[in-house]
Structures are given as C-alpha cells and as structure tokens.
Amino acid sequence: MPRVSVICPTYNRSRAILPTLDSVRTQSMRDWEMIVVSDGSDDDTDEVVAEVAAQDDRIRLRRVPHFGFQAGPTNLVLPEAKGEYIAYLDHDDRWESGHLALLTAAFDDGAQFVATRARKVNASGAVTSTADPLTMCWAPELQLMNPLFENSCAAHRAGLAESVGGWRESPVGLEDWDLWLRMTDAGARCTTLLDVTVTMLDDPGTRQHSLPCEYDHEIARFEDARAARAGYRALTHPRHFRAGLEASRADLHHWYGSLADTGDLVLPLGWEGGTDALTGAVDRHVEAVQMVWNNLIIEPKDGYVALAMVLGTMTADHAERYSAHFRTTMTHQQAFFEDVLPAGSVAR
Image 1 (cartoon, rainbow, N blue to C red):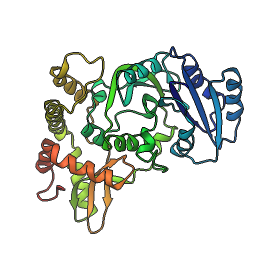
Image 2: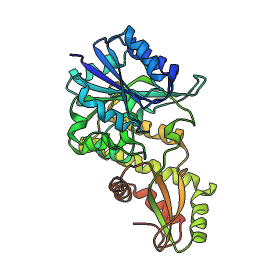
Image 3: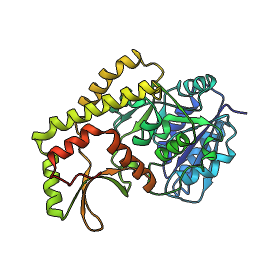
Image 4: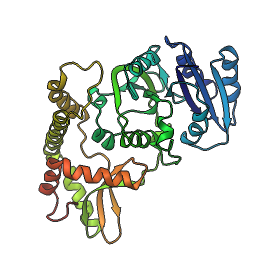
C-alpha cells in the first residue's frame, strides 16, 4: 500500500498539466500513488494524463461528471485512496522534490495534519510572493480567522476529511479553509513547516480570483448610503493610515502573545528564536502587508447600510464566528473605528 495518496482534480488543462505531474514523479519519497480526477474535461487533458499513466503505474486517471469546483471530484475519489496519508495538488501547482519526504517525516513524528510553505509565480515564472513565516504559525483561533495555507501545501491522515463530512461541495470556493476549520473544530492539530516546497500559479485568470464572496464582517452601520460613503472615506483617508496600521500591530502583538502564553500557539518546524521572535515577526508582517483596509464594501442591509470587510468564508456560521472573535480580540482596531467613525455607528 502506498504511504501517500495524491489527489489532483483537473479540468481542461491539456499539456499544461505535465509540469504538475512531473513534480510528483520526481519526488525523492517514491512510495506514493496519484489520482488525477478529470472534472468532465472536454479537451485532450484525459489523453495527456493517460499517456503519463502508461509510463508510471503509480498514476491513474479517474474521470467524473463535471462539477466546476474541486470539492466534488475530490470527494468521489477519497474512498478510493489507498495511502496512509492524503495530499492535495492543484493542477497548475508544482512541488519541490522533497515535499512528500518532509510531509511523511512529520507524520512519522505523530502529526495529524501537515502544511508546508508556498511561493507564488506569475505566468512567466517570476516569483510574486512567498508565504510570510508568521502565517505558518498555527492555533485553532488563527485557523478560524485566516485561510493560512492552500490545499497544495497540505496533507492529513487518511480518514480525517471523511470524519468531518468531507469537502463541502459549493461553487463559493475556499473549500480548503472550510475543511481545515472543521478538522480543527473536531480536535485535529496542525504541524507546519517553514520549508518552501510548493510553487503556485498567481494569475488573475485562476478560479481563486473570480470567486463570489457571500459574507462580510460589519465594521459600522449607517442610515443611508451617503453616510456609509462618508464613513468609508474617513476610514481610508491617508491621514488615518498610520493609526490604523499601529492598531493592527498592537492587536497582533497581543493576540500572538496570548496564544503563546496559553500554549495554543504552534510554531512551525524550522522557526528560530522561539516565542521571543514573535514580536519581530509581527512587526515585519505588518510593515510588509501595509494595506489595512483594502477590501471594504458598502452593502445595503435590512433597514441600514453597512460598511463591511469582505470575507472569503463558505458559511454564515463561519462568518458569524469570525465577527464575534474580531470584536472581542481586536480591541485596538475596534477603538480605532470608534475614533474615526461617527459616534454610535461602529458595529458590536
């Protein structure tokens, strides 16, 4: 039986899938199987994958009816996976040769759920970003509030996904964040690594750039759209930028420090300096991100108009949990809103 089952949903990728397949075939850890799930492709993708499978019997093609999102095809083949561990790979991403070796070493040390770090590249191959080391710190609260890592970076013990209901099938997207959170709620704990072993395509044409976002976190409520627009201008005015940035910094310092004090914070393997290094890591993250309120919307609601922050959550329950946690934990940012926005408008 293979140690790792790799699940790769694909749709109309044609020969562009070959680098993805090659990145699995060249893994230093050789004990794997790969299930490429064609989501009703109507080009030559199936033929391309079949050619490779004929050369390497660890790869097999599974064709399913078209869903239009990865959760459906993944759920169909999960029961067919034979490995001790399940790893995921998007059809336009690639792994470094040591990716599976690092994952299995973590599992051998007792991990339930493992994730490595990723870089993003554009269509010409130029690196556009690399995951901040701070985002590889893990805790149940951090998983609630942030996607943290994409599915191409992650693996878990066989049966864990099915034990929480499998991948949620919806065209909304961010299926991975939803699954990781449900596994966390069920008691699973994540081991993360600072090793950069995943290269992801960063392209405006990919699905993640066109997903609908149905939920939001309300910052303030106004009587009409005119008042909401005034609130938006006030909150995003350059004269308030530094105050907003410092409020965000203060909240992150307190949050990560509190998680470290309670023992809930898991530092990634390869992290140097222990919890003493968190202060510098938070400062570097805040200065690198810079944009504090870059995803605000003005949204008509039932009886009022909201100034809100877009959330990429799949469910209303997740969005409600996010908002409740933000309002009780991010106290410096809440105070910043009170200072900048009209009295009585800030949502609580």
